[in-house]
Length: 124
Image (cartoon, rainbow, N blue to C red; front, side):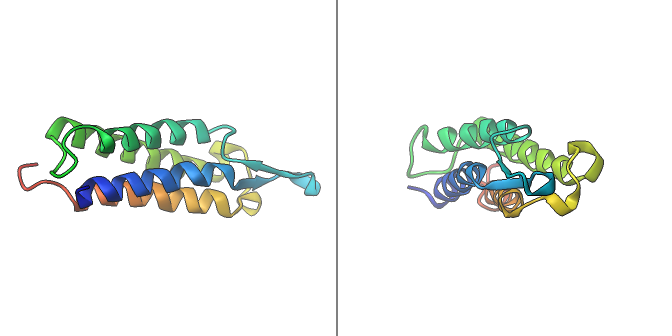
């Protein structure tokens, strides 16, 4: 598999995996909420699209430009979603309640975007 496709696939799978980690803590120690609540569904959709696209077509070469643009757009959308999650008033969760799963997912979204841009074809 081409390094471009492999890194996009790995970053997408890590992003999907971080959805099952705790993203926030409920007030008064009542429990934790994973990433499959709220903004996590958007990240799940964008990472799934990128992972599936990395598996399409000839795996030994670069992605064609339309597929590459879709992967880049989904990486941008996932990163923006995580930035909106971290803004204190937008998610309704105080920043003191945000847990390690959300930070790991944000890093995975940034890695997805970086992998898409860093390993682009010379034609793109």
